[in-house]
Length: 431
Ligand code: NDP
Image 1 (cartoon, rainbow, N blue to C red):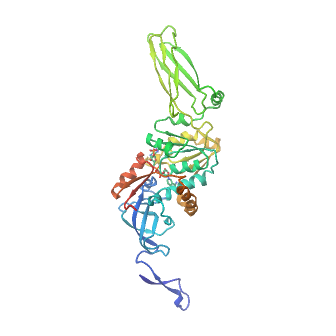
Image 2: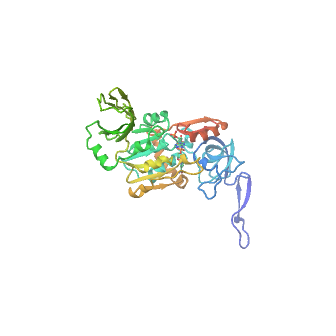
Image 3: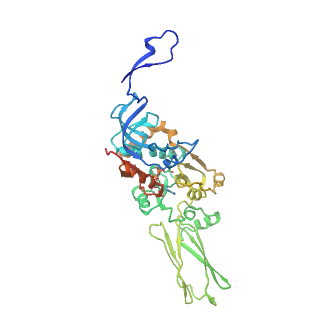
């Protein structure tokens, strides 16, 4: 479609050079007509589902297709740098064909030696998010202690791998056993735990100084315990104190109360006390059998491993809420938090309060939020870093691929109940 374009407003007598002949596709000025191939489910899309004014992203328009990241093939373009057949990734519509703006956040795909779906994940927006959040915001150093939440997902799995490449000690959390196994076995992170099963406070919490010293002061002892018995009028209160010399273990204190009726005249025997630590250290179980005359009490006490004996240097925040509160208590002096996302809050009408923000002051923590699209100018630098790592097998990526446009709503909602194992993407046309 040839057009005569007026280049600028004219002053004086018009010249031929004020006008130029241009070939453009009708109605596609600065836009592309594309066929969508892979579409991405991302947590921020939930944020766009509510009516907002003055937000970092626009609300979706009811009655119009959902907008999101995807990989597409250009069928026609009104932009001089794009032509029919080009592959692009960027913001498109949840539909088979879209007309998309040729804006900054639509990138031409140059490297097709990898799975094209990767451009919704490791080589697309989530990859950039992990890269920017970790390297630009966290100022990471070799040997530092790094904690990542929502760790098996699109962003988290990469942050952990970047940290490992740098020589950091990496602990990650996820919800199911399958995901925890993935984190430990596939990605080889130092530790991983199920945040739904473990008590966050106990898992992460640093002990008060004197207890800390006491525990670390006896590293050779696996377990030292003593029991204080306090008699009450109608029963017995037991107080158990357990100390672990293994520096990864949490110091635990238990108070167990129960009544015996009639109260025993005296303590007869402490018959046996056994302790054993489970092999994978994920969950140590201490069983103490106490035989009191003929009454038997067998409390089962769970001891949680202690992942950060000296505190956390870097926390990559993906979930917010209770996790953030527990983490704040455990940050190290002059540590850093990259505020990437707060998925636990996206479906709440009222976000949960955070109680431990004072720790930012006392521990001089730098906590910084970011939006990945502000850093898209760094995309070429990111590709230069990550493509060789993928080629050499130093970085791996797990995807959860659903099929067909109709599967999209369930796949998106699944993010908020942890159904996805890896990056959630859905495929329209497999290439
Ligand atoms: P994921 O692929 O990690 O999927 C979401 C995961 O979050 C789920 O699999 C689930 O994992 C976990 N989750 C869901 N609900 C909860 C909850 N209530 N509490 C705790 N965890 C929950 O998503 P992404 O990697 O794409 O995104 C991770 C975070 O990064 C999100 O918060 C997202 O908004 C943010 N983000 C921010 C960007 C930015 O520019 N700042 C850009 C891209 C992402 P599990 O089963 O383990 O609980």
